[in-house]
Image (cartoon, rainbow, N blue to C red):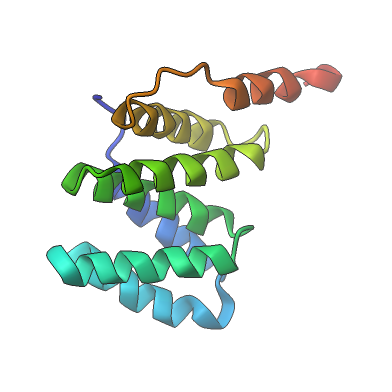
Length: 144
């Protein structure tokens, strides 16, 4: 699937925003170390760094920019190593992120939706996007 944005750049931008917002508190330094290893390497080293970042993400489910970073990073993992585990993880991350969307997150919504479709396609699933459709209905209630 051709994406209308570069997931690597989006990941970097989201990670910088998470660092600026101090979303990870004292774990920010470890996250920066793992992100650097993930971004600068390939193979086992990158995979280990990616897994550490995912584990950190489980501890900070409301860290919006960091969760967005994990979605883009998971897409990169799936593109490099297209196994079901990566597509399933990406779908899980997208669904969790979209469930907590705010109407002001239009750019994020478009990008995460695009990746969600990509993860679904990677799993061979053609599914109607109920979460995104529900968000669209809710976003325009109350005269918005």
